[in-house]
Amino acid sequence: MAPYPELKFYAAVKLVVALDTSGSIGQELLSQFFMEINSIYKMGTRITVIECDAAVQQSYEYKGKMASDVKGYGGTDFDPVFEFITKGPKVDGCIYLTDGFGPTPKIVPRCKVLWVISPGGTDRAVKNSFGSIVFMKKNNARSE
Image (cartoon, rainbow, N blue to C red; front, side, top):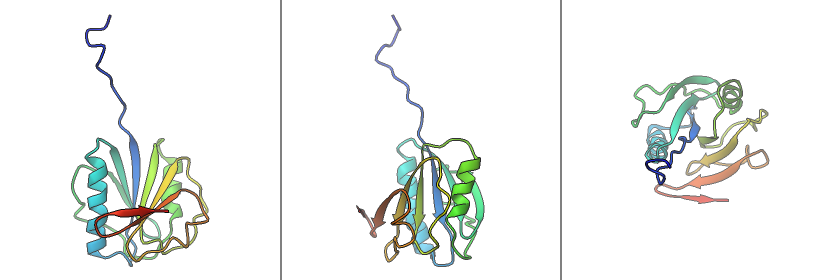
């Protein structure tokens, strides 16, 4: 008999959080995105942040605080994130924080996707695509 039979171990969930850093994303919204990332991180989730506008700008493991050097502020393309996921190690899911303004993605990743659309954003590009959609408000979210 094991010395502590009630002791159970669970592998940490591995998520990619894609951060839309296109020109339409302001500093206030970026801060709100990082508040969401931090809430997920506090649950014990291993998070790889991918900053992307029209291309992946940088990726890093989230360590509990907002990045000081967010890169991007160009156009928007969702596919570079999904290409990155497809070529990288297996993840349990992807949360894409965005205002939704961009072309419909063509690459379907090998994980579940949750689109988190910012206040004032649109789901036009992703609603007939893949994944689930949630709309953010200033301090909470609603789902569709």
